[in-house]
Length: 240
Image (cartoon, rainbow, N blue to C red; front, side, top):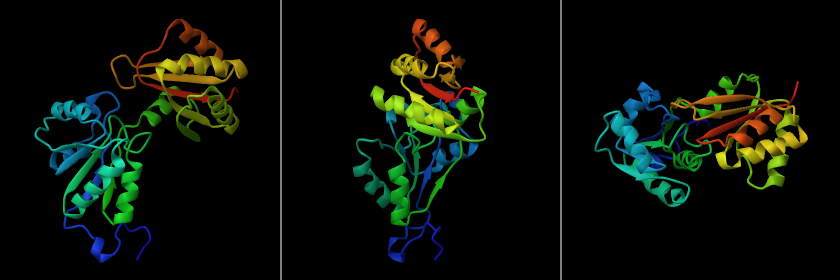
């Protein structure tokens, strides 16, 4: 059997039609849901959501009502995933969504993919919205080689190490950052690399989307006087 095949032993095969589909959802604008994703969400048997309260308005916006929703987040996924795997093996089609963007990218999803592989459950990953790629292109920074580091560490020592490693890589580095920590991150970066090229992409695809571009020193001064709000993608590149 080809090692890339999702199937395992005959006893682990799901019933006809049983599968799991990982569905990216809009990172802001609800109309960014793809036609294929919309079709999956309309026709699946149930939807596993990072937060059912967050996903329900998106489904309602697209006219999807009375669809069974089940929560799947970092605090319950170890317990919930076996239940969902069993449902797929019994023939259900299960869609997996997070609050925004691609499941598994700094969100629940990785463990579920691994469980599908281990359990011989067919699965698909749909393409769709990504805050990482949207911010990368919008930043104007080099995009032929880049690295994504998830959320920056909370502790300042580890945060500085992550920033230094990103600059030393010579690639565009992309991080998620809390608006409450952004000012401190910029101040820290400006203290040892004031000329580093920085972009702060905020509230992507939403009404108040903004891109702030400049050196670490310039953006540190700006956000010190204009505290940021909303969801932020933080990008940096070593000075030319």
